[in-house]
Amino acid sequence: MEKKMEKKPLVSLPWHGHETIESIPALLDDALEIEITLPSNYNHSLFSLLHGDDAPGRVEDIRASGSPQLLAEIASVKGLEEMSSLIEPLTAAGARVQVLSPPRIVITLPASAEKQQQLNRDMR
Image 1 (cartoon, helix red, strand yellow):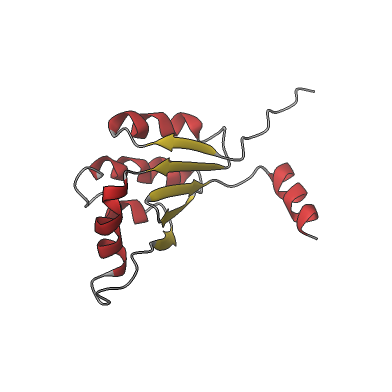
Image 2 (cartoon, rainbow, N blue to C red):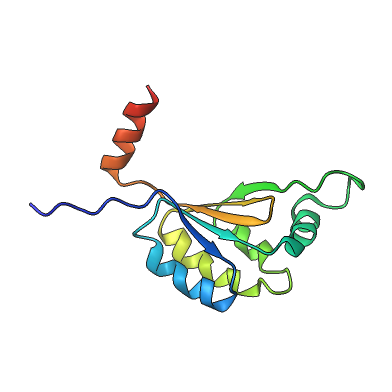
């Protein structure tokens, strides 16, 4: 019986635009989480987009999570337009998306059934 390779717990990628977007679909089977680190100048734009301007002077700490559809909003930020091309493959993979400060996008993929059982045992 062939043993399946373990998924890597985390794959970290720096933001290089199109190059980063193109590399993600190939990683979907290899990682439990993919973290894309964005340049710090995106923090204000993402905070304003996701949390609104309802609290001026508030610390711009981004905490948003949801389905891959969240990337449609992120793609409205200049320079991040290609994020929308990830919605379909991430939805098909059953992924969840978080947008956090400092600016980064964390894609969480479902663990294999075997890995999920191990994680559940470890949490007891």
